Length: 280
Image (cartoon, rainbow, N blue to C red):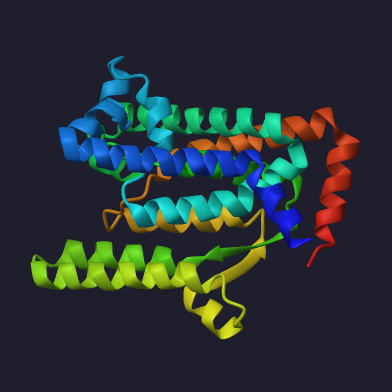
């Protein structure tokens, strides 16, 4: 039974997308060592000012498979594994792949246009991002999946792993209030160790160890609100390495696709919603 489930997971489209992200991450590390990290960012990361001026349009795709570090990759791939397998089961493999790519592309376009057009002001930069600061990661596409589930199975329960997010926020706060390099370095090392432990303990059979990651249980319809709104508010006071605009763009396309499916397949989507509202 375990072997069957393992083979089922490995044969999924979600696992192949995760593998593609890992391969790209390794290739980008190698390329950075050869050509320099800044050159690779300029060529493959999404920079809003470049997109608005009609340059480097391919980065709308390449940036979806790039990540800013091992913990960024781990956190996104774990999220994709949990959410992606669930969405793939509901809408099917082919439709899942197409929607994932479209959601990531739309998230990138939304981020690029909002930051490129409105990020020049102080408030605009805090809301949408600064035009010349690049963005990478799969989270825009993942938020598209979250938006879809929030519509199709709104009462289904999910855990938000709050610990790593809190660690990132605290690191950013320390970096913004002090210039003490030793303190900043120490806090960042401690935060990274905590994030790694949180990820590892989430797979523990010991409930007390899992609590170290601060998992918050909630219905899926609340998850997008909790995952975006607090970070937007905090972003007005502290510069966070989190692309809220891309997350919101992905969420919008996910919500739109979810309502489209509900309208086109009312009986099937109603049955799915009823089934998962009973799950505990």
